[in-house]
Length: 339
Ligand code: AHG
Ligand code: MN
Ligand code: MN
Image (cartoon, rainbow, N blue to C red; front, side, top):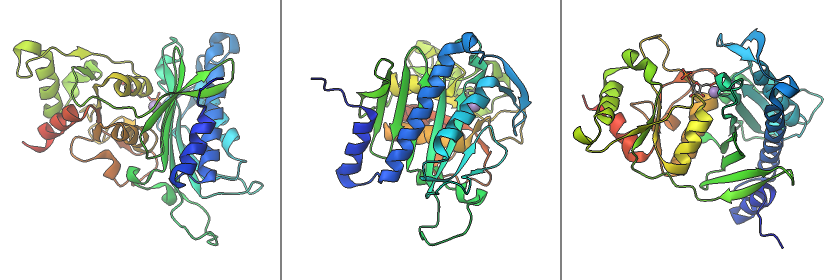
């Protein structure tokens, strides 16, 4: 008899432990996982499925959309709109929120996603992924009839009720938190189901590995320059140890490595566009990843504040991100705050 634990069983057991996953949230997470399976299939087909290349359009942030950005967005919407568990969805690839159409029953959850993270890696066959975050619509009164609006989404990351990502790499791996630690599930393609492959994920507090796009070095702020410069000095420098560097250019893949073996990931504010707080999106990328990292014992800040404490003022807000092994994140943050 197999002792494998499927995602379904894991979620049912989470629901039983202290009832902190209501059945609607369990359904929602199963549906998101099903959508990720279908995106994984499209990714696997690559050129054979005609899914590579650009779509010839731009998203609200002025970025050129790839065919897979749009396919993944549609898969997530179609999978989630009819189940009755959601009030609305928001995506990096949509200008405004997507309210569940009136022909379907509505629930109290809000789903946010970066349907395809690491778009620049699609055509070169390098790991990409889907990142998601779940919030609850503010008004707990089920008889309230006010329609859902963008303001309902503008909640701090600390309000998330579930967050995760699915990385489409050599394996397809779904990583999830519902506030009770981080669990990883690997897609068993023969069975067509996600199987629990790691629980209680823990990020080592110290690390000798950093991830940052070094080509932007000349644009960084002094605290980031100082931190990286000290790492680069290795054994002979103030850190007294050699550091390794990795940069995949897919946040999902970089964060997955950090959850697996530690490290620090940074996409800091830089001088290229001084009025933009950063490149990464608070609601679709930074918040879900920061909660996962914290749930695994790591830390996440924007250099000055805990990311999960930031009050969003708009849906597509961007933010500076420093996350991963706790002691390193605290060090970079202290270089910003103790001047
Ligand atoms: P997306 O593909 O969803 O736009 O996100 C890409 C992000 C992130 O995944 C990655 O860490 C970063 O952009 C890479 O940026 P650079 O190409 O500037 O290094
Ligand atoms: Mn992204
Ligand atoms: Mn994206």
